[in-house]
Length: 237
Ligand code: OAD
Image (cartoon, rainbow, N blue to C red; front, side, top):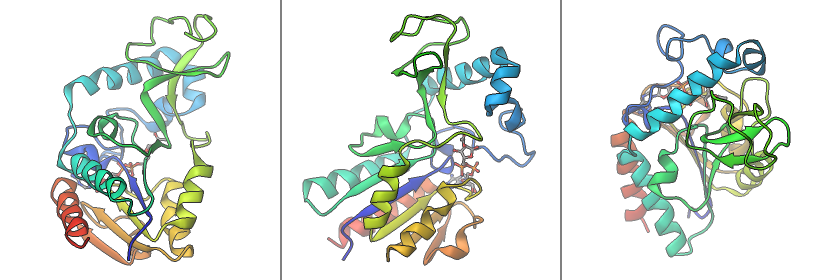
């Protein structure tokens, strides 16, 4: 009997909404090498390039909507809560806001969020919808030129690791959706869950680096696989 569920999502769950994944066949991320836009060194070297890159991605959120996979996970969480079945935690590596818009109660963005700005002067993180390229003042400390995208770049510590570790240690089902399993610590969550005695399931377009670690793997588009799995879970209640 499943009580506590932890779900990890990656870029693949947003692909059918039109958000590009990270590891394209040409090795570039929307035309850029990852070290040119997603490291603290890149930001120090060329802040305008990095701000523009994330400003464009933030603006693009206005053109995309949650797809059937996001909506199905929101339905599952709502049922889990309503019926008091156990804990439900959704952890996403995605910096888009599609899970937020689908509606979740316990959602952790471990790699940060496009719709948030982080002040390098005072450390405050605040909701942010507009561009950052024109150096707006920090809403918390009023300093100008100190805001950066609230994104966890390579070499930085992911957010919420204590809460995620606690949930993994208590879960009896761990499901990984739309992630290549290339980036740690997220890629290691399946092992943490197994160590806690959980059953593990992968839902991904194709076999990932982590596939051999899962008890079960289903391959296909998230927009089809996830709603089918959610119906299966709800049908078994
Ligand atoms: P990746 O781009 O590495 O992997 C996306 C995965 O989704 C791949 O395994 C695809 O096969 C799969 N996929 C693509 N379309 C799909 C679909 N329609 N349905 C289901 N699966 C699909 O993205 P992530 O694993 O999320 O970190 O990347 C992890 C982290 O690396 C990101 O959070 C980001 C990046 O660098 C930071 O920015 C810190």
